[in-house]
Image (tube, rainbow, N blue to C red; front, side, top):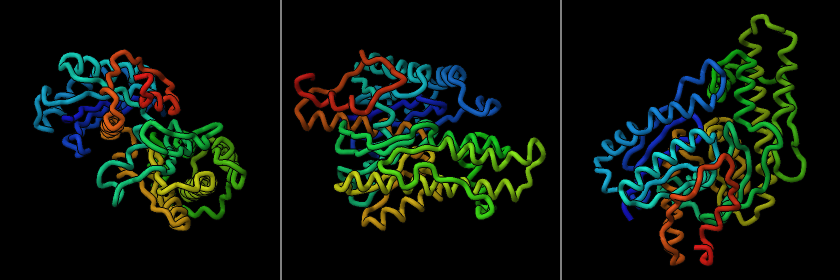
Length: 356
């Protein structure tokens, strides 16, 4: 194996990374798009055009940062789903073109699988992250509990029945007159607030299973703000509601993850990934839960919680290693098309010897 160049373009961040075969990060670059800010959310067409403009230069910049010529690469990987189809087409297209030009394999990476395997990056978890473990994936577009049983082998235990947690943060931030993305803005404001005068519900709290619901919580926030109509919102009120909302999300997630651990008694580790996993209150709640269960807790560094190419490269390396261990030929996904949905349960087919 030789270094892998990875591309991430599934939403609004354009990212490239080069990883050595042992997972050492040789270079990583990220461009976060600002063109969506006036719209309060990601506009798919704007995102796709920005990826197209940025990626060729970003690939060259990443190769230069790693001090490598393109011919030194052993493979090229790119997020190929799930995500915004325009961005996926751009990233996968650039990756495939580079792979063909270099006569190297192209590995199509499932974006969710990349988040799921991030905990196994060397050095992130002391002693490594053995299978099986429980993953809480919590971001702007996803909120689910996944039993990670091996590379390519996943079981979804529960997920959101309406909004994802990150989506709820964005909507509440907008109600409070804060900027986008909402998660960091709500967390910063919550540090100033007293949640006690602003009690909010905990949807599905205590219910069997580990599904999530945040739509009712978002509506409850709107009801708290209704008396202020369109007038100026006093900062202590905004801060108190932000703190109460953040506490409610942490309570909901903690309860749902506790149920997921009950459903997965063989879990060796609790892992959180995704953009909302950067929230310090949520991390503290999950860490306390893991300690109470006698489990270690792991979450990526903040820069690897959000969408990034390092996780894409690592997922490609894990896939190549797992196939090699089974005596299967290297992956080459040139014919695999980008897709907005790509269920994790389809990944096991990559390790079916009869289908190889």
